[in-house]
Image (cartoon, rainbow, N blue to C red):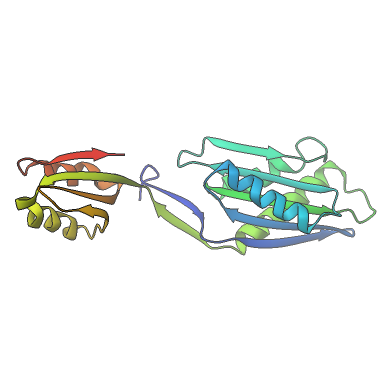
Length: 201
């Protein structure tokens, strides 16, 4: 599957842990689709681990992986958010948030120790999760005269595209979801039928 028509993400939340010199790093990975999800999960984790001093995180959003952020939450610059983000990137994931909560164990780890710990904690959460490939889909609205119902249904059935919404009258409407890679082929097939209009969103 080409990266233009699909992307890798996590199917469900997962968690991990890393311990070094008494410090504990609890990691949580979440599938997300917006920055609002980031706030929600961050609040949840901060509430659960309210006594921890650091709740560091990184996320990547979008099929092109262009929306991302790394946050050190008080740790020395580049020692927490960046290694977490590095793990998301090295696994080619998107629509994923990873939060790592740190409890200080009394011994300083130094900057290289922190980078290693945050990287390992993030990696553990990913390893314990399930990576899946999602196909990028688009919604199409098909307008057609009633006599063409069977023809339209035949095209949709061929690709196993199920109607999300449908209205039947003199002019009929069907909304369905189609993989981005198939849009051109399906549109071409439908537009060969007289009196059909298609709107892709």
